[in-house]
Length: 446
Image (cartoon, rainbow, N blue to C red):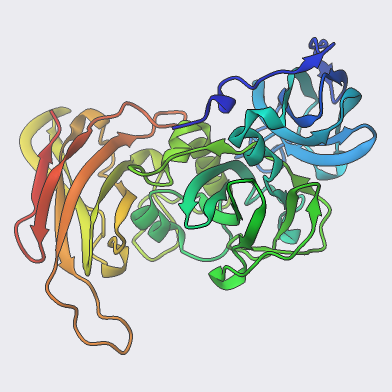
């Protein structure tokens, strides 16, 4: 699923031994053996930092290369040292200096000192083909103005897909943000997308067989996808997050920016949420941000823009053809009597009784449904697939009778005590047509 680049970058650097861990400041000298795109692994944590605790959310780091501002890193993952992979952009053969410093203005007041080290700086040259192309054209993402210093809607992960076109191939870059302050309500996000992060396509570039740029595009406000005619830094497009649901524009007022290393994914048989599964810490960041922002409640009804504790949800990723129907999943759990499970099942529907919480798109999708309080992963015993009539389009007549054809259930899981995905409970493949209004298709979990 991921390219070899994300496992081991091809290093072409000399004099790049890691220095000792430093507090709030570090300088790393390295020498590039050839021209190429540089990638750094920054390992850092900050005392008392907790993304879910107001006033102690994070320390912001400023990164400069050869004395010029490169980007910021937000230490979102807490006290324990964690890896942050960042793009440094194109470097010429020869010596370079990487400097990383605490930015007091953008750090939480109650956050302690940051421990920083740079265990690896690597170079990818043009001889690495598609890996080099993907890195050399990765977007530089500028922060949305109302997120600067606010510890919200942070870009966490970037990935790209490669799609064949009649004229060549397109590299498509998407970003996972920790949340979105506008757009779909939180509980509907969980019901129809299986997450509270925001996942957005931001930039695409089409190349011919010789690597010449044929077309560029970006996802702008209103989900419009116009041609990109904005600025570049070398071959990297500059995009500014400009709406509360994280659409981007070709210009903006902020100078704070992020340079994430894009990972290659093939999502032919997976939903986009599989990118989160590959970085399970993103679930934890989203969960604690929800709590900090007051979007988690004891047992909120649907439509309130709040959710129950994320650890009460079951997450199901499935694939199929929905056509002109709508689909919901039922989760069968055992009831407990005196602390012991009995043989009868309680069924919880992913649509929670609301038609707008059903899935109306083909392909792979993820749902997340709150289960009765106290439900454990071992209590989940079956998944049902229900097909419904799709509401007619505005101004249109009733849809023709349809059915849902389920082809895969890729995973079923709950979050553990750390808000990260726990044990995978089910994987199923086949072909199961489910007629609208007919009996559901049931897959047992053994």
